[in-house]
Picture 1 (tube, helix red, strand yellow):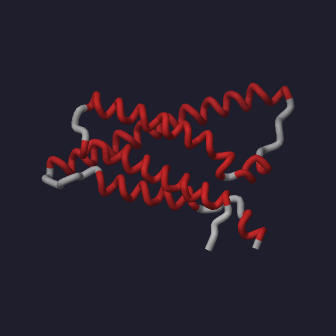
Picture 2: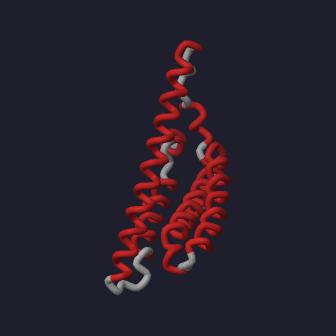
Length: 143
């Protein structure tokens, strides 16, 4: 069975995404120094940025589904909505990160070994599975 280039890239992307998520969230079990974790996470952010730049290669049909451009009068509203959505996503991400870390630390105080790794593995599996799906339906259309 041979895989086409798009599917192969999607599976590679899914694997890299899952590994990045696993590393990010399991890191407190391996690296206890907050400063060292920050350095490793900075490197993981670079990996994430590279991965985000690969999305058009992994999902080439996504460009065809872009929303129609708005007129010039709608641009300020669109920019404000994008800024509000970005701010909400950032705040939600920070809250989620703190909640996951705190839960792992509570489990650590209860004597659980590697308390962050179980949640990290679950999130990595979900991330990898979501990234492996052909959301465009291109493979169904070709069949």
